[in-house]
Image (cartoon, rainbow, N blue to C red):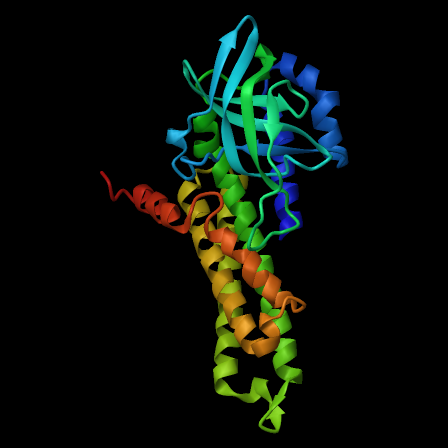
Length: 301
């Protein structure tokens, strides 16, 4: 799951640059876009702040245009990839005089520093850090998209696709939990027979199998709507909500089926149990997804 997170966060910068101006594309094609496509570099997406997680409207990091440069001050937290040797730049969501903007900040930009790796319960092979901007300066052309469009680009579109990425990761984790649990239940003996023959174990396995299949259907429908260029905010939120919570249940059942061994670090399901917990927080918490679904259903009109 850590590798998947590193990759899908790492390609978002190059994907977003495809919407830049011809001048930006010409400047960034060889420096950022093609190296990302080749797998030589990744990017970091710098949105979350200590006082602004799902509530992106509360972001305080500020970019001010001075003498042809954006001068950035503020800080970010829980940012993936920034400390990797192959991380070339960060996409930083900032306040500007005209609203919110996404500013491309190269790793070597003056005034851009980062803290040490943060210690996490799971996803330990995914680099996560704090970022600091102290009069950090980048050229004016490093503002991506129109002025004041940054938050809408992320909340109104970027989060939708990343929720499908995260839903897909959750399905993969849950499917692996099911496969490992079924194999273990067939080989593990208790009371002179394989534990797979006990109804309580069968019940957990059946629920895992059923929910994995349901999750795929929900995720696939949202993906088809995305590909057809149909509005899919509700469906993306549904996929992320259901798949993340489903995978949490699957990992919990897997640890239970493995018993004491499931609580040990050397057992894969122990890692899945720790890693998947972040899925219900990242890209908007499960509670925020419920709010989005209710909004899209017209509950607030």
